[in-house]
Image 1 (tube, rainbow, N blue to C red):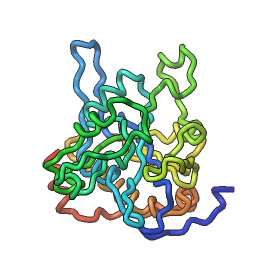
Image 2 (cartoon, rainbow, N blue to C red):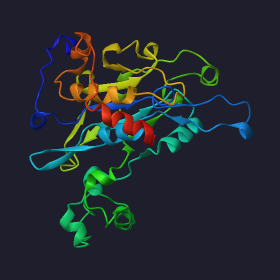
Image 3 (spheres, rainbow, N blue to C red):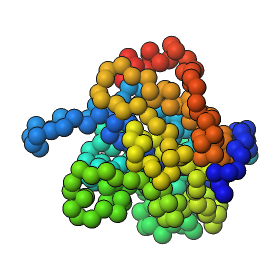
Image 4 (cartoon, helix red, strand yellow):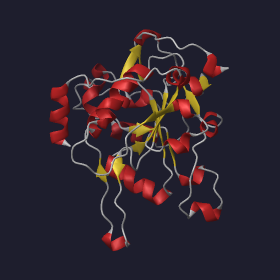
Length: 280
């Protein structure tokens, strides 16, 4: 049984492939969506403080044997309807990745030499792929960390919860069953397109402010305090520190079940916290 396996901490170079799957809730977790009475009086969502720092960490990269991999593969799963999910993602400036990671990451020398002679036809069939790829490159980017792409592999909404039409349009208790993700989403190695793996309870984290939605897989939940639009909030900075611990676990669900995240999590740099809150 996966939950009975003992979790051990691994080093950066030993972090298993695929990278952990990080599933993000939206409203109440990353932003606050005010209720509105009509389309004309709709208020814009309020992004949670320290969002930029949070995004830069989860969408950042690390190297394994000189190959660059994501810290996490990230996807969205919100219980909101699709049109509302689109509005929230626009506010968060998060989009869906349309190219594999390796085509979004270019070595500095290739960028400087404007070397766009990449042979991609063997990997993709789209006629306009090369044109689309070249447009996505910033020739003025001197370091990839200054231009981190905040892109997710999948976007799921209320339509992915198996609700009937009546419940879909009503305010009912919903459940996020991770088995739906584990059975349908496959990770593809960006350097070996033939290598495909699936995620499971050992390498999946879901961030949500509603633990009731995670009744089926409670030990994959990284619960976050509900955000209600406050101007001062350091919750995302605390989540970063917890993610730094979780991404190095060989069995995330077992680690959480055995109380691995209990206790005070200290924010790494308090000066950065106040500075980031002022920027947000």
